[in-house]
Image 1: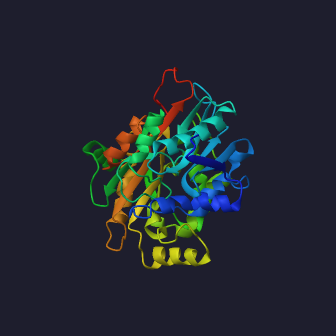
Image 2: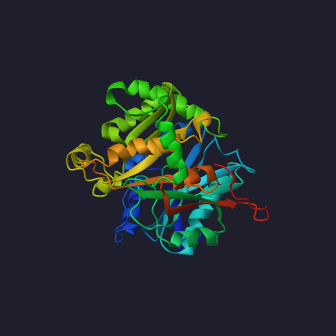
Image 3: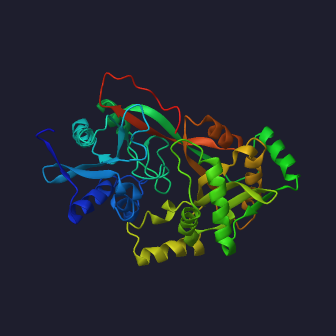
Length: 391
């Protein structure tokens, strides 16, 4: 704490409004900044909407210089991951601050103190109190318009974290490829073409008429491909159905593909439109009028020409056989048609510890476009620091 700055908890609706609005004031002259939808952020701190709050905890702070807001931060403890480290580790996120190390230090100190009082011995940041594919990481390279619910920040943020003592725990990459024919490595292309000649393999575009069946297939593939990874929970049919229903209002069926072997689900590649190309003019509000504007711009005027790879998975027994290339070829057959409105695909949140996934994305034509850093700060400054070796 310095005499220049003071901080307060966010305990009232007025304070929450200031906490939500501060980044818009900070980035008012930055053409790349897109304000997230307020409810996408506030639901993370609502016990009714965020299941992590049933056993976890979260707090938000505002930083003032006199009566002017100059920074914000959140701190949280995820009960599912806090103990999955060499030391109990909490998180801080939604960090925004003026370019002043003293101001940033007050915010980091507040988060550290709150976490330390609850038994934590380290903090990761800036991270999300929820899914990793949202609001996670400090942008370090690729300062262009952010993808939907991906963080954007000024270049000086890295300096604020590192000067405080945070260290690079891992990099997370966003890959980009333009929509064009080809792009597959020769090995992947050869495997995919051989696989496509095998009648036991089939690739299907999702259909609105049978969402329940695709939800069941999603659950089977996800649990086999991801559920065996430590720290990743298996999902139920209800959870899978909720995920697809969430996507349904904006669903473009041309962006979701499944792979089957002898009619058994073995792979999926789920993409969605980058809503940031539309919601930047909403100023964080998704009222009924903006919902209407979103659908008109998305469906009628087709003002989103960028798509995001949301999730990709292949069951272990079919990995390395060309299924990844088969999914891409199935997508390209549709993407190269004249009425296809999208020009580029970005695939985000691929950790530098996940070399196999990096190789897969590079083999289908992706190139690193952005780098976000997840930092870790050990409260015991004498303890050896170790970078992440897994997610």
